[in-house]
Image (tube, rainbow, N blue to C red; front, side):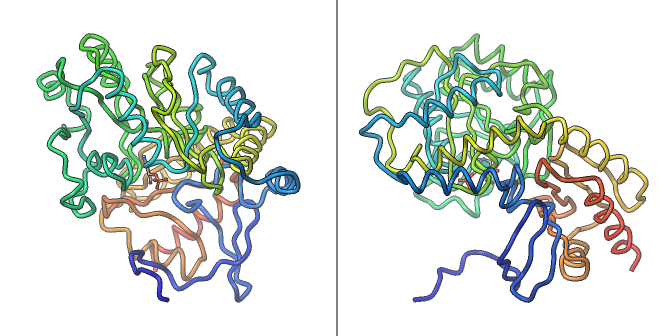
Length: 375
Ligand SMILES: Cc1ncc(COP(=O)(O)O)c(C=O)c1O
């Protein structure tokens, strides 16, 4: 059987990883500044993470959500404490798209409405409603096109005021837009959205799948604006590579048996991985490291004239060039062995390293980028 050929892949086979380093099957070493789409939060193959998953597997790896799984409560307590959302409830699932799908359902169950407001350049996943709220028609099949979803220009107060009313079920936006090219919603815009959502009984969903888990220097990017969403979706860095996602749910929402569900969500291994991630973030002060290394990277980039702008916060950065960055990224990968990320804005390269990245690794990148720009 052949694989269904949907990914543009590099001809590199990575077989080993540690921290921010990767090795291919020929023994070549790479620097990972992308973490496989912002997934690697605490670093590859962290010993505490390995120990937690291995240890759990010795006892039990899986049983369904028809029994009590104490590890889920442990994960929820730790997440509540570290994110500041102690009084929220947690629904565990497996991917960012699934988290958003469940957030839309919760909003609609809550207010009985159907309409969704999303924004230009948004990415929320590839399943039914998540892809309908993603601003990319090429990945939205006819069956996913949804007349209830409208897209508004990002950071535009006027169009938002015109569109929001008592018919809207939910407004969804990313803490910082990732795939779209690292665009930050202004704090004023977020506050305005929050207040109009409250006025019209609309649920505010913050998609922190990419921008969450300390990546931006706060646990969630929206915390820079001091807003309180009704629903917050998480995935990617939550499991550091183990499929794990969740929806943080405002106490106003009351659970009803069977209203949501999943077979794999919140299984023992996923919870062991997720709890280890939070413990490592806390023990190694990785959110502070994201602030410091993000500032350091920004300051080193500021000297390079080929760069038009650096957008983002902490370790979620978009390097906007004067021209398409595809050739530079190829050079970084094949000549200097550094992984970076693309975005739907062809001039913008995404840098999404582990939150434990070190300054000498950033120096390596700056040297390689400088050399790539002149040769
Ligand atoms: C902001 C955001 N939301 C949702 C998703 C979808 O996550 P997943 O691929 O885990 O379904 C992504 C994936 O890139 C994302 O960046």
